[in-house]
Every structure is written in C-alpha cells, then in structure tokens.
Image (cartoon, rainbow, N blue to C red; front, side, top):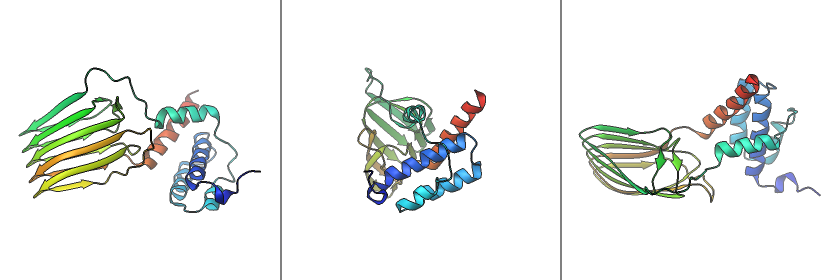
Length: 215
C-alpha cells in the first residue's frame, strides 16, 4: 500500500509539486503569472494537502529526461582537483571584483585595505567540497555572494566593524561547505545570496520552455 500523504516528508511532496508546476508551465499549460503564483504558494505551504491541491488540475508529470536535466542544473558537480589549491585576492586602495564561472581553490585569502572587494561564487565551479575563505579587512567593504544550495559558516572577529551572514545553509551532504574566517577592523563583511531559489527555479523553467519552443 502507498504511504499516507501526511506521513510522507513534506519537503519531498513540495519538490514533486514544484517539478510538476515547472513541467506544465514549460509546456504552456499554465501562464507565467499562474506559475509564479503557485510557486509562491508551494514554497510557503506548511501542510501536505495544499501542496497536492496546487497541481491536481495539471496533466503533465515530470519524466526521467526532466529529472536528468534538473540534476545537471542543481546538483553540484566537482571537477577533479588540479594543482592550484590556494589563491590570494588583494585590494589595497582600490576596488576588486571576481565573478563568473571561475574555479574556486581549496583555500582563498582575501586581503582588503581602504577599498572594496566583491567575491561572487554564484556561478563558480567547485573543485573541493570544503572551501575555506580567509578574510583580512581594514577600513574596507567586503561582499561575498554564495549560491543558495551550499552550506556556509562564518567566524569573523570584528573590531568596530559589522559582519553579517544572511546566507541560508540549505545544501545537503554533497553540497559544498564554505567556511569564512578572519578579522575586520573599521570595515564591513557581508555574506549573502545573490539569486534566490525562486529566481533560479523560474530561470530553470524558462530555459526548458525556450528549448521546447526552439525544437
């Protein structure tokens, strides 16, 4: 006999509901407005039945091809670790920014003095499951953007400074773990997510829709 709906893990039911919403939206069954409205409802639902009710009128189910494509987009893929395991980014009396699809070393040293530094890991490629970011900051502003699917911990010593970590640790066992350590004097260090999970899901659904329309 199948497991009772209320006895199933609610996050599993939520994931199935969102998958069905994406599949039906990408095939033009529901409008963009309806998709985003139901996606919000699915994200905020705290009971099983309302999640199921959101998709009872939708005919299409997620198939194996969809699951493979989703895994390629949301499951972290690690490259074989190369020789470079450490890197230093220095910003003295200047501004510095690192973003795009760059390869993250095992240990990263950020040195910032009387300037600003932005480190964007949103689209970065991880070679190592555990990454350590060492920050030395004086009279400067340091921003670190992380993907939403990673685990983040921070241990910053602040002296007349501000230090904020607003990034959720939502990754599973296989997700990268980023440890942010160091000190800040008369400066600020902020760790946050650049793109929310809803924005990623909408972009993912639109990519499938574009591929279907182009085929």
